[in-house]
Image (cartoon, rainbow, N blue to C red; front, side, top):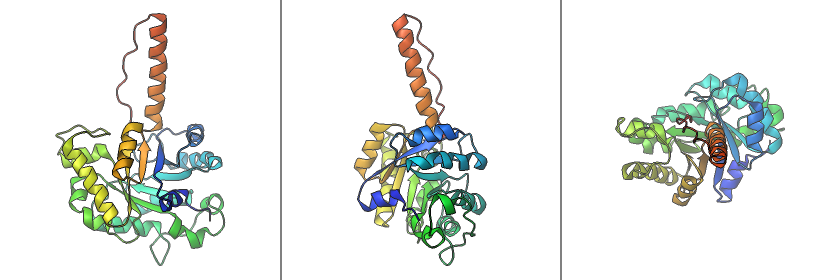
Amino acid sequence: MIPNAVKQKWAADSPVVNGWLSIASPFCAEIMADQGFDSLTVDVQHGALDYPDLLPMFQAMRASGVVPMARVPWLEAGIIMKALDAGAYGIICPMVNSRKDAEALVSYMRYPPKGTRSFGPTRANFSAGPGYASEANDQILSLAMIETAEAVKNLEEIVSTPGLDGIYIGPADLTLGVTDGRLPPALDREEEEMIEVIRRILEAAHAAGIRAGIHCGGPDYAARAIAWGFDLVTLSNDVRMLAAAAQSSVQRTRELIGGEAAPVAADSGVY
């Protein structure tokens, strides 16, 4: 089986830069895969796509050698196993709120005797190379999202779950959860109370011997998160990047020709 390059980078004490795909387009996935990301995550939860889009996007990414991952819609065995059979080398699972949830996630991702994953890696048999059946348990990454007040309360129990490779912070939902909606959902938190929660989650993960990832709005916060000790940082997503580049070009053109500035678009990112 082709080794998981994310695990290899971590073994070498190198941080992973992850990309995020929310547009249902193999061509968009192919373009993003050629930009130097270590891994790319297809967002089946909030992205404008579903499983029929996921598989061809993985196919389009294959030539680049980028590590294909998926954020599934929920903690549900069927979609997790189908994403793995499609060739995902890592699963990010939302709303893991307890040790029981984390144990279920690990179980769905591992073949017996380590789990309950059903065998049938239809595409993965080809995309991951020979030896998949015997090596997948050790190569596939299971990442649980910590994004609710309940998950923070049960943090130590979650991160100590056997077989869990790491946690992943979604700052928007985490902010809604731990502040009871007092602060608006957004990335790149600057509030002292949110930084304290984020760093507490990071420290708990590392104390348990697992990895930690976080979704960031851009390079500056990603570099800051790596300096804190995060093992994986996600840079925005394809929707925001497309909108930002297009808006910048239009605004600059209007400035040069002396026209009115274009209106600033509302935040179109989904996390």
